[in-house]
Image (tube, rainbow, N blue to C red; front, side, top):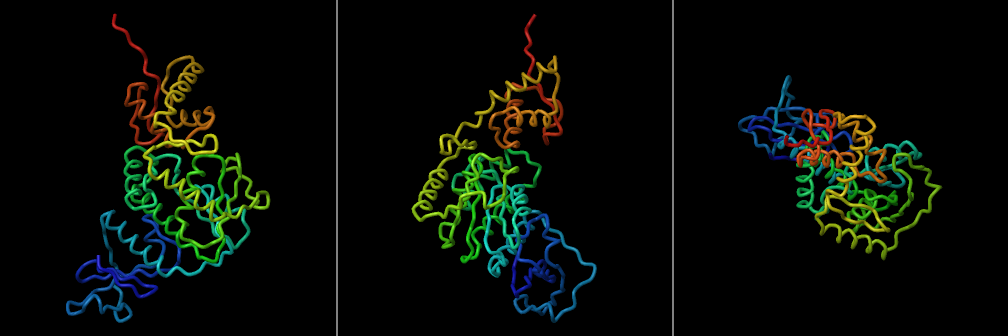
Length: 351
């Protein structure tokens, strides 16, 4: 689709005789979910004798009662074009520092705790699961999302997930050079992987980078008072060390990682299967019978009973895999953890 930019407007040649005009109203990146809500849309007729390159909407009357329809993939590309332009004209934030954390839920907690002005970036994906191969490159992002699409059932649209990741990478790379950057992390695989990925994305930045190690605290229930922690400025040597560690991770195709002995350790994707089977057996024993258990309830029990549980959607993936392999029986349709039940497959014998 042909485009022309006249800040704060972007023109899209939607049809040979129709121009869509998008007005940027905020410097927040948009997603598929809010493309029609953030910004202002209007439509104009392009006269047969008029060139698109010479079009200026101020010289035309907007159409009334107009509509447009696009395939999701086309809409995704349109969103990418808008975000690319927002990136080009991004103004300096009024914040005094930038804080980066793993997960948007954690980012919400931190935003509530910090005094304004505040600028918090929450990374939308759990990097303890799924491939990390070449993730700092487009091909690696495609590779990762193919695996997630085929295996992880989080209920979100594929294009939304992909768009969200790219927006967050943009947001990190677009941090103004004069702002100090605080990266919060703890002793868990998700945040240790995230730390190394963030520092890879920031490899060409001259900002002061401060690491805040929150230790063994659970991320959601973490104490967010920055005065409680040692604020360790990152040295050039340390930054290079973390970058090399990321490069090592980015050569692997593991889909599950643990934090063990102060290092990130890749394990086989069936690493948790024996524990999952054992806990389902425990639940049957407590039931007094081998009845079907709603998968969402079972996953909640796994999170409580496992010593260091992984991402809940990874657990659900392994439960489905155990169904497919014949270890578990299935009742319902596994389109989400709420829609099916499982139990241990009962042994049968030939009379």
